Length: 411
Ligand code: CTP
Image (cartoon, rainbow, N blue to C red; front, side, top):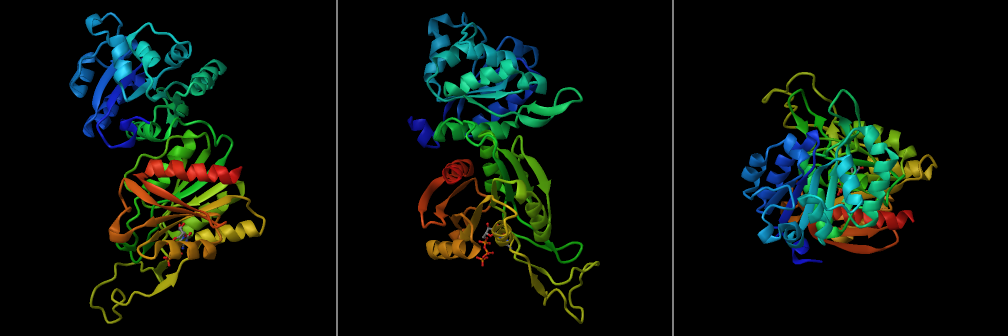
């Protein structure tokens, strides 16, 4: 691994842009890298400049922009840019562009840079669904993946016209995070193709009255990161999401929004029979008010309902998923999470045994870490007694480690 892959050092990033309408999103991608201090060199194709002008890319990146192999020949830049890059990301990658890279063409600055590059290369396709599904495109994608190039799964959703389907460019924030994950953990391959995954994420909320609720600090980041990585490994992903920060939903995932613990339980139980893997990454509210008031509760009333809020215990979703499997209604591998402040391993083991899950991702939240943070660390405990330490990393890197372990279990 190169030094760049191990640290949060600034990277030398080539952002390639090919000629599709989503080229405008490349501007935001450039900013995603620039904001963390990376040195960004934008290389558009000639066609990309029909959508966004070179001046925009020069201003955003602070570097010159060329398209052909005959510019700045004295600097041999058609070779140098690829040699020096830590990471090459192309967004959008059109069907034609994928075909040209798969064929090993080097007739413009971007394709020659990719042919030279020995660093990770990540292509983010964007095109109409028919073009994406066309066997010619799929054959090119397979060829590229076989060569170690990461071809991201496109997002589902509204395309340029009125049509919807797979083919959208994932949001720039997601592309940047996935590309950095590839740099640190290796190319994404479709190792979860054909696997159905259901993940709960975020925090549930229980209303006290029309303006107040019981909730928690969960941001949903780890659950969404698990969804991102599973989708990139080819799984079909459903996320049952409670309250989350303003996160970009994993591209390609179905999102079901819920509010309370009982809503989340219903949606998880409904999907568990069809799932191969269920992950309870959500921070579930263990209690709810015994009665929800239709009107705003007032302070200082004789019953003082606010000061002496009565609570009722919520169902344990993880436990009910395990029971469902014991009853034969589901065969899913079941992964739980635990956040502990002290005696982590001891508490984690006891929790895993009590809940009956196959694996538990144990986070240490001593000192308030993890919640809402970009990074995570802890231990992955298995029902057979195994303990794998998960070193400090981004929530996407942690997701990679978790899916590696789940894939071993599925085998
Ligand atoms: N969980 C659940 N339903 C609940 C509470 C928790 O499904 N009512 C799940 C969480 O999503 C997580 C795991 O159980 O995967 C452990 O959650 P945690 O809050 O650590 O455990 P609790 O059972 O609530 O135990 P405690 O709060 O006493 O530590």
